[in-house]
Image 1 (cartoon, rainbow, N blue to C red):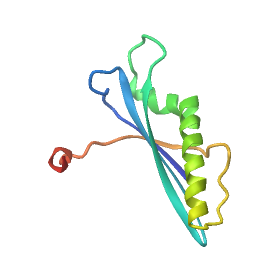
Image 2: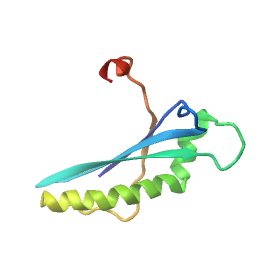
Image 3: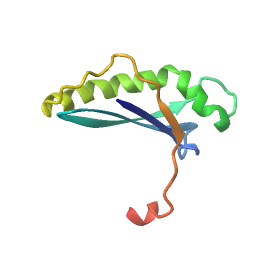
Length: 110
């Protein structure tokens, strides 16, 4: 079981929010699956964003656990469809949290 969470280093256009993308992966001997979820993260204060502390703030926030809850339900459906015998914990495993990196050629793919 792997739980990855990435956050955008830049604010979304016209909003004081950051994009958060998360992926949960689970696999066993007879199959597995991946589910991706996304969200916009807003601050609850007027304090400026501190990107240096964002990863640690996310790690202890309810937002990451809530994203996992949405992903977990979908992952269980995927695993049932593939008949993979994998137990998906109710509580999120420790997340791997990293800053998202924008591809240099992203505009070329649009």
